[in-house]
Length: 244
Image 1 (cartoon, helix red, strand yellow):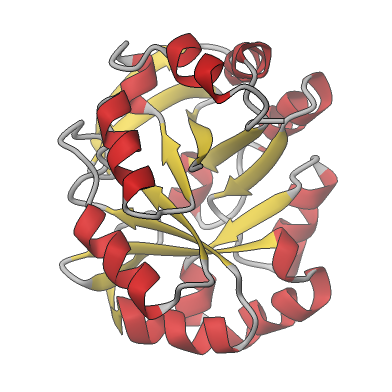
Image 2 (image 1 turned 45 degrees about the vertical axis):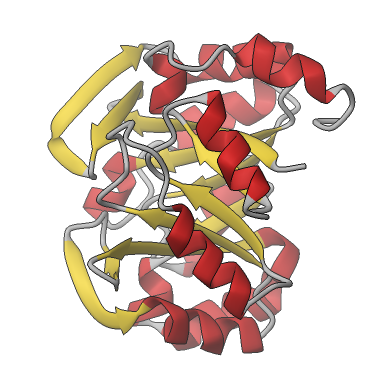
């Protein structure tokens, strides 16, 4: 059964969502990300995806204090991304309570550093961020597109031991227009042992069921929650102990 991972994106200490990664298309939903995290925990979720959008834009972690509050006030397993560019950044993220970190841009611009982190912290604590626009990996808060094609990009890291990949189809992100199931299916066909986390476009329980039917191991979703498109109690309750 597909793993359900709600998302909290942070700008200025607030819980927000962007559309297609555009900082000019920002909607503020809540003032306290920690309170939102507590609500997810109370509903029965065990995992949480946290993105420091200020950090992604600034190229260094900005909202470590918010992360620390979330991890100290809940027992959620938190994966954190956004602005992790240096040894100091990744150490700060783990010190603030992140169980895992999502790293994307560095895997493109400084692959040797990513490999060092993978060796130092282990595959269980590292999530490779593979954010895709027009078939190319996007970096630096989706401000730039690299020359890297998705499947070959994944190949070198899967061969190096990466097991967790968060893949976002940027054209779908925040649009509530449905996930890029064909893209995720291609990834799983190529790398069947991968713990692939699909992200972008989820608008309904039916979208999650379609990802599950396609064999996608996990899904991150956010805007559909904040816009009231998904009833979280309805989503969680039939799963019994799956989120335990």
